[in-house]
Amino acid sequence: MAENTQHFPEKKYAAFAFVGGMVVIGVLWFGSSLVLPATSYRNYSESSGGFYSAMGNVAYDTVKMAAPVSEVVGNMTQDRKVTNNYVSVHVKSVKDFHNTITMFVDSVEGKVMNEYVTVSSDDQAESGTMTVLVPNKNSQQFFEAAAKAAIKIVDRQVNSYEISQEYTDLGRKLAQYEATYEKVLKYYDKAVSVEELLKVQNQLDQLQQQIDSVKGRKMALEELSNNTQYTLYSSTNEYNLPYVPQGTFEVAKTFKLAVRSLVLTADKVVAGAIYVLVYVPFILVLGGIALLVKKYLVKR
Image (cartoon, rainbow, N blue to C red; front, top):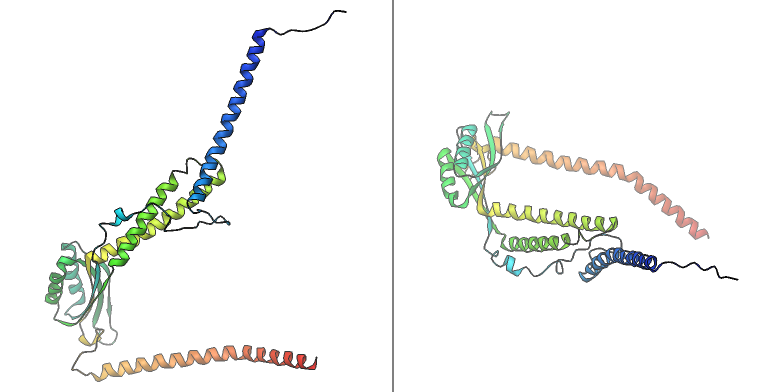
């Protein structure tokens, strides 16, 4: 009986071997492209102190956030302080006084922060408040211009406080956040799953919020320390200014202050009485319940 054996040509064997080898290589390459970036990303998260907690929330560690930033903030430490002036002035016209102040502030590239004018219903006297920022180098010149535009300077108070340490700390924080942002950004392109992309994006968003917040505060401190703030209280009636004139006495003004104090005191007393009336029933109910519970426990 003859054997019915089918033989394949050697060329077909070689073709099948080649195709099979290419398939195996392709599978291995595709698998490594999925596994290695994810592994690298997880190793980075673990080695950096853990960007994410067990609940998926971001865990910031300002000490481990980035490389040392001493070089970045080395030239940042400097003496900085904020100076506020509160000046009461007696003027002929509040509007004219404000116009003069605004023109001067514009000429030295300062800034008008706020401004308003009121008219008293009692004596029709004008009163106003104006807050401005002027460069430190023009501070004395501004005060002299304000004194010249007014009838007289009635009162002046100057308050200053240091912000050097806060400013330096903000600079250090900003450098750390920006360095960490750049570090995390490198792993955005390496994330391969949607979950990893969302986690990295969430981290970047929160870091950007921190950067914007610190940068905004730092810029505000720079503006305040580079300029002198003046709050000007002006009025056509000297006794309407927010101060107590020394060596003078006015019966009408003293009477108004006494009436205002009486009204405020009466308001507090009436408010307290209303609170007592509202809470007393609840207190009585709670007390009754406590007595019933006590009697029930005693009987048992």
